[in-house]
Image (cartoon, rainbow, N blue to C red; front, top):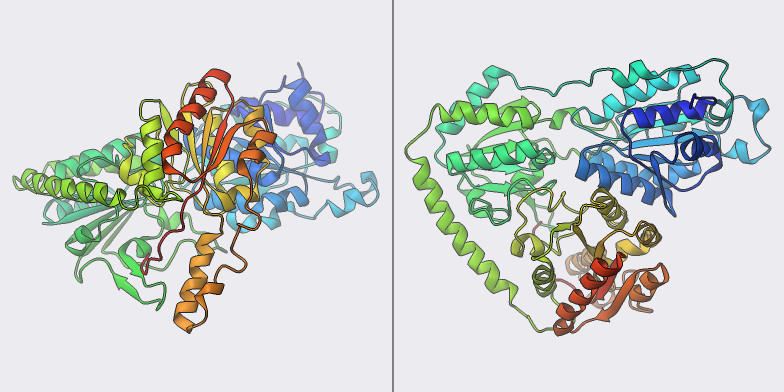
Length: 579
């Protein structure tokens, strides 16, 4: 078919750039684009119907994290963009190249409908999200749709990746084309190559690392590229160096004997830290007393710090998510997928006979730590409501024979400690803020649609109450999701904050639940899920009932092809002083 309308050209671009899905909540300002996707494009990209724009962007976020390929989220003008703004912000924090497409009422004011087109039009839509997208644009002609889209795609996917916002005039979408508009040149244009490190700086880093006595590797986002994940492991094994995984993505297999995540002891003994793709290095190397706000170093004075990554290139001019400034001895700007193999080869040329012995010693220490974790996990084993460790163990026992993926939340690190998470395919990275988990998890499941994997979502109760409509989308798509509620019937993270304030001020801790408690009435998540077409059971607070319920749920997913939810009740965690 030959494009007849402006919105047909947008479909040509979406198809040409390989966009497989477009998540949306219907909106009048892109009715032209909607019609073009369905009729001109044959529903390619496939429309993913969502009940809220925030869910649409979060689904695109989860899908893109898994596949590395951008997905589109389409949002209505002004109100839709404002609904989706928080999800766009989290895509920025998580370095995910989501393509957010928006629309505005006709810029030609003579074509606007009374009232509705006026309150849903803005001079520059992108102002609402400009401070935390990598780029935004509002092309003023159909001829500019191609160059605008191509530039947005390139900017979004160039590391450090992030979301972009492209806004299309409703009038331009719906007007007939005066002449054909080709976008072949824009689709064929070469993509930018990755950023490589300064060779001299890499040689200097290799020398410092090779001659360190107690090097430690700290990694956060390296695992977003399979090559970097493998290279990080090879480097750690070569050096016999412990790895601290900050879990932005999976950077080291959880059961690898050099994975020392959560252990301050190796940092306290380090004489060199290699930071690999870390977003907030100060946070990684310091800890905070949540009561006194005192910051304490995790590393000794004089410890050499080498930073390798793209931290300085991803900072927002508005958000301070980059964290407190951390002085380092050597800062190397590079895409770690390219820099790590080059660095490893340089280090290998300066190999030491001491490295194998260091590795053997650390592996013995790791075995002791793992045994301690197993012992700790059995504390309050039969308690009701469940302790997180028991729930994590029950879920692991139920899924370990399956081809599974954990979507985000890891049950207060217990899944991380007890499960064999051996590749980024199994776990695309830590959970983010409230009102992100369910949407991103649906996006992860969409990315694995049809490949036979069981998607496991450990789902906080407060998060699901923000966006319960996401359950409908998962059921509509027949996604193979096992959703296990991490339900403590509270916004307990903030409850903890109130307890800390009460402790510091000497006020009544018994009142800390006010404004936090979700037990009166307790939401019936099983009934909620059932209303959306899910299989569901619960609430379950007896730990002995969890294993059989998990088996029944997995059987339904496999046999009936629909998602399943178990509402498991988990006790509130103990306060910790440091984070």
